[in-house]
Image 1 (tube, rainbow, N blue to C red):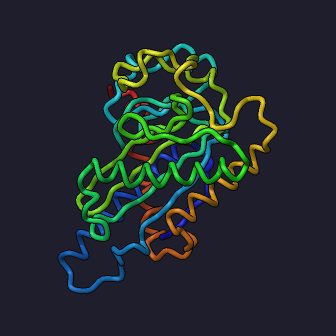
Image 2 (image 1 turned 90 degrees about the vertical axis):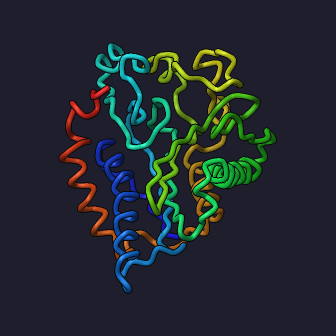
Length: 273
């Protein structure tokens, strides 16, 4: 599996890259299925783990999210917080410093059972949970990490990780957040109460429902914690090949530039719902 740990300069570029990864992988696999031989390998070596973190807060809508129902537009405009749309489903999120973004590009040809969404959720979330648990254990933090709802991770019944996915014919992009040290006030400032809520939330407001992995009073270095978390995620997925060595890196970058021009740099696309 490849590993990609670079955060691109703008949130638009990062979201365009996310979509480009699954679109290019799927297109090349389709070509492979109709041509006897190809340079593209659809096996496990071409799967990818991507880890990145935005430098400034940003609201990211789900593909079908309705802006007026989920976003505090006045606060976002006042604080110059961009509101963008991603290619995957799910509800709106806030990301930024202290929130590690985790994306896994999965091959159905290598993992056919994962076409069933319940299996995909179980397999990805159990791996993410275990990586976070090993990280907290290494810093002698004792709280157990749990999977709640469809694809959330929690500590003491409070959410710190939400996830979404984009499914194609041959590939799946499963991506989400791990809040380890992000200002919780951003959620109540920039998001409205979500119209769809998991049962375990019990109608709690953002700041009583969401938490960080690291307590605000913790003396643990944020930089050290993030590095250990990245190491554990990479070990969990056996992600050892540097992304720059991928033979399809150029095709992904070209697709990302095209998506950036046609969608992610277009305010009308983000505001389409």
